Amino acid sequence: LYYTTHQFFLSGRSIFVVCWNLEKPIEESRVDFWLNSIQSKIANATVVLVGTHLDGVKGPAREGLDALLKQTKLRLRMLFPSLDIMAFPASARTGEGMLELKDALEKKIVGSKHMGEILPSSYLLLERMVTDARATNPIPIVSKHKFLEMSLMCNISGEKELFRASNLLHNLGTLIYFEQDLVLSRYVILDPQ
Image (tube, rainbow, N blue to C red; front, side, top):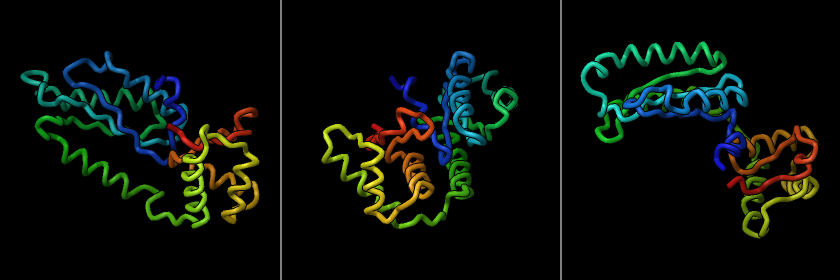
């Protein structure tokens, strides 16, 4: 089910972490599948590729690890030119590489154009209404008309402003709204889970 629905959760506000086991050839992983999925939905997405199980890489494989990561990044950047790809080896067991990974993620997050963005309080009020409506609706789906009524109660009026608010809440994972689809655009899914 996740493979068929994962595209619902791809957001332009995300930093994507894609992992593969360094003890196995990357060709046996699903890295290309996930990068293709991300690139097809999000322009200029940031992807942090994490080679896991670093503690299990020994001997000649360990000595050639830097070259492998460099070669892998180059290959993937050629296949997926619109993605900003970084790669890090790490071990959850020993903690090796985790500090570098954490530092790189923090740097990307702090440098994001969305950090410090001021959101209208009306959007936050609408988010709260959506969250409350989840609890009271046995089926967490409302018509676009009902969603428009909710947004009007939050002082969000006009198609442009409603689109901006719903797009933000969609990207934050609060709701799902398919504006481009003629049938699905009639409904708003209040619970993405």
